Length: 104
Image (cartoon, rainbow, N blue to C red):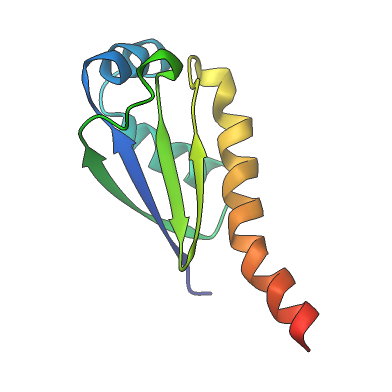
């Protein structure tokens, strides 16, 4: 089965960087890839490190993009937020399916 492409724009500016330090040890991009893999989701993550997303008070921030749909996720503050991130990714990829089904 081929994997669904999902781009993750990952804020790495100072406030988000400090927040990511509380979420994971090491690279947040590698941590995200590992979490998606362990959850068994058929997604291929392309992690793009970005500068400030102007949501510093809501650090850490990331934006999930699949085709022409996107989800901005903020307030990622602990490893327990992974469920919310996985749910957002599944919802984002499911948007394409729901739109296709509705148009049929």
